[in-house]
Image (cartoon, rainbow, N blue to C red; front, top):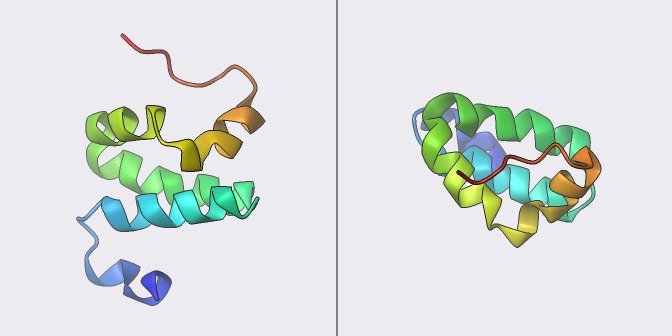
Amino acid sequence: MLVPRSGQVPDVWTIPYNLACACARLGRLEICRVWFKRPMALDKGNVQHAALDDPDLKPLWDSMSGTMWKRT
């Protein structure tokens, strides 16, 4: 349902963010990375803040093996 609608609200970062989360939980990490770039381009600060503690994105962080953002 979200994929067809994602282009209708291009300035809302939560839609591609949630699609990235869903892809990560499904193990579709390449697609997750594609979706995750979109919210980062819209609102990097808020997306980083949300993503650091989001258990749905753990598979993405694990796949990056130590390249996860550090808290400041």
